[in-house]
Amino acid sequence: MAESLLILVTKPPYGYEEAFAGLRAGLGMLASGQVPVSNALLVGEGTLNAVAAQRPEAVRMPSNKEAINDLLDFEAKVYVVKEDLLHLVGDVPLMEGVEVIDWEKARQIIEEHDMVTTF
Image 1 (cartoon, rainbow, N blue to C red):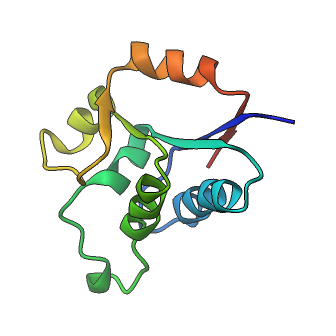
Image 2: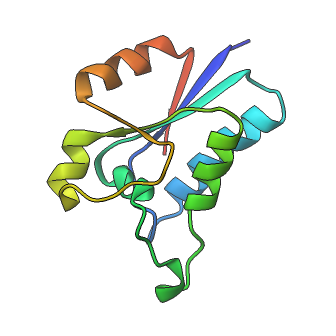
């Protein structure tokens, strides 16, 4: 059985279901005890899920901020690749608790996990 799961989120918070599903899958695996470690790595457009200033009510969509906060409450790590975020929106405030990393560290994190699933 795998000891660690990494959810690789590649999609933005709105317009797609992948980020919504991925973050909640990681949370479900952790909360149910299926894996002792479940972390999330936000890359590409997935980095937008960690932007602090989101207004989901404007597009009538659920927010992924709650799932990210729930993961953090379970002591999971949520990583954001800095280069991808800067390319998309520049230096903007992020949710409290997420860890900003570079691609070198992201590759290390991917290698450290037993299972990686991409959303």
